[in-house]
Length: 181
Length: 70
Image (tube, rainbow over all chains, first blue to last red; front, side, top):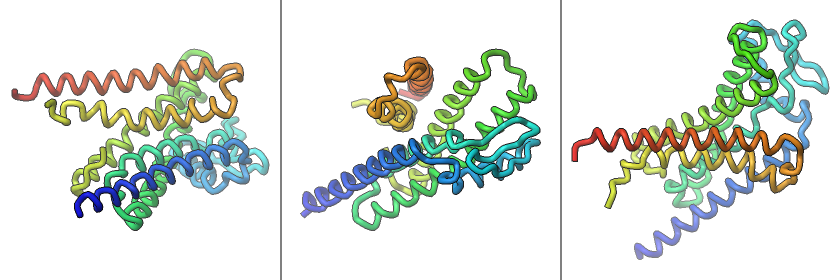
């Protein structure tokens, strides 16, 4: 009886992992060809948050994204942070696999992972763009190739944000009594 | 049998690092991005950052283990 229950739980974990992977592959495909208009659902709140925490005022420019002409800075489709969102969703879904023991818990965990991934993307991507603006305007004096700096900022902020998000999710899960890794 | 807490930081770092590598390098490589100029350069930066995170987590585990009572 216990073996059957365990096999049942394993089946739902496998389903959860496969669904998470399918979402990631489909999301990557969507992001590859998405225009600024397609990504407005995430670019709009990002531009709003960036306008809050930086001196910039970003307004919608059709076909381009959100732009601040004074700062000469554009929040375009590649700045949407969807890669971070997908990585965060995947990491949180994998971290939540142990809690996926039925259809309901699997659906709940995947939905929570998606919601947390989008929320975290807005926060982390806003931080990344604010940092890029600060570097560009000289508020943070960094010497070197601008494109290279932008790339390094992206890697450090996204990877750091991803690790922090996962550690936070694990801590919350542990506190709630669910082992996640 | 080593306590699972001994490798907690490394295990915690491993999942997001692997997810990041899958999204930023593995899937683009499968889609043909590996042939693009600049991909190897970008991949080198990503790999270096990932290894740094894992090394930091490993060191953290080592320090915690040494400080913990035996």
